Length: 363
Figure (tube, rainbow, N blue to C red):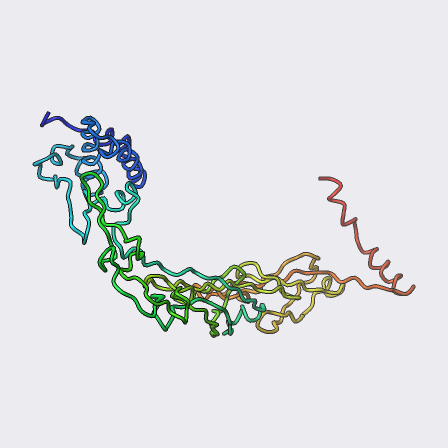
C-alpha cells in the first residue's frame, strides 16, 4: 500500500543503535542473497532486493537516517520530498547504482575504476641503536639502506616502447554486463594501463622498479626511547601504476647504561654511602644524566631510601618538560677487616637498642 509505513531497520535486520559499519555489512549480506542475477525470474526476490536498497539508501546516510528516526519512511518513498530514488550516476565507462559503488564492487568482484590499479609502495622498517646520552640530548645519525625506486629509464612503465592495447583500445577498461547493471573493469590484457609492451625496458627488466642504496642523515629528537619510531615520508618502496612510494620507519633502541636506569622520562641511580655518611649525614656529589649535582644526605638515612632530584630526568619529546631523577641509597659494607676493625664494628653494633628484624617477627 502506498501509505504503509516501512520499518527499514526490520528490513535490514538491524536496530537504531547498530553501528554504520554493521548496517553496511547487513545490507551486503542481503543484497547478495536477493540479487536478481542470483534469482532469475523470482519476483519476490526482486521486490525484496528493491526494499533492502531503499532501506539502505536511508539508513546508510546519517542525515537521512536522522530524518527517518523523526518522521518515518513516508518522505523517502517514491515521490516523497526526501526520496532521491536509486540514483544511477555515470562515472566513466560504468554506472554506480544507488551511490553504493564500493558495495557493488564487492558483490560483483569488480573494481569500479581502472585507476584503482595504481598502488602505493610498501612501507619499510629499519632500526638504529642509541646510547642513553644520545637519546637524552638528541642526535643526527647516518643510515644506509636499500630500497626499490621507480625506474628512471621507463618512469615505472616497464617498457622501452609500447602500443595501445587492442582489447580495450587504450582505455584501460572493459565493460561487463551483470544483469541490468553495467560495470567497468580494468582490462585483463593490459592490467588497466591501456598499453601493451612491445619492448621491455632493459634497465629494470620490465618490472618498472630498480634497486637503490640510500644514505641519509636522520635527526633523532631529544627524549627518544626504546620503541620510539621516526617516519621518513616517501622513502619506502616504489609504488606501482603511478602510485606514490611508501614510507620508511626507523625503530629506535636505547642501549643499557652502566649507571643509570630509565623508566619513562624518569632516571634512577644507586648511590653507595658509608655507614658513617648514612648515620651522621653528609654532603655528597651525585651523577646525573647531564652533569654532577650536590646532594645533602640527612642523618639516619636508611639503605633503600629514595630521594628525588626534580627536573633531572629525560625531556619529553611532546612537551619538552623533564622527568625526575631518583637516587636510591645503598649502604656500602667494609670488607677484609682486621681484628681492630672488627672490634670497632662490634662497638657500633652494640648501639642498636633492638634487633632491626624485630618488627618482622611480630607482624
